[in-house]
Image (cartoon, rainbow, N blue to C red; front, side):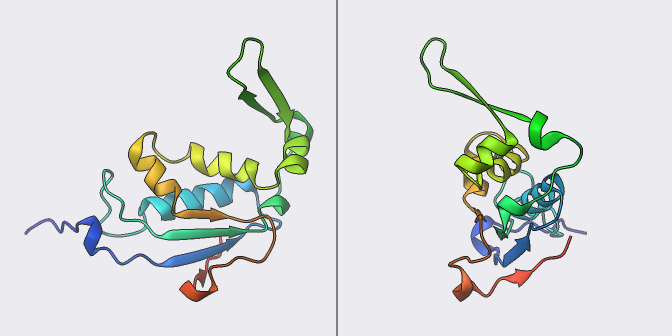
Length: 142
């Protein structure tokens, strides 16, 4: 029996939309990264882009368990000496509502060129509206 091998140019990519309102941020990020990677397909290979497009709406309304809203810290660095900046979840959401979800999904994808390519297939929006209605995305439940 031969192994099925599908080249990335032969893959038909679907569009999925995930509503993150009221759902745990980590669960949404895991599902989005898995679909973007293509792990739900029978011809998944770890070194090719065989995944689908994912749209995450209501990213700012995702829930965190416990005291993570106040205690979870996000670090960034300006590149200058002493340029380390620290924000907790609430401050980061106030400044940029989609940033925590972007960091969560990005951290679950591989590093390097493949991860960059896969991350371009994930679209994250703070509100319920998105400009991808023409692609006819399917609603995905967690």
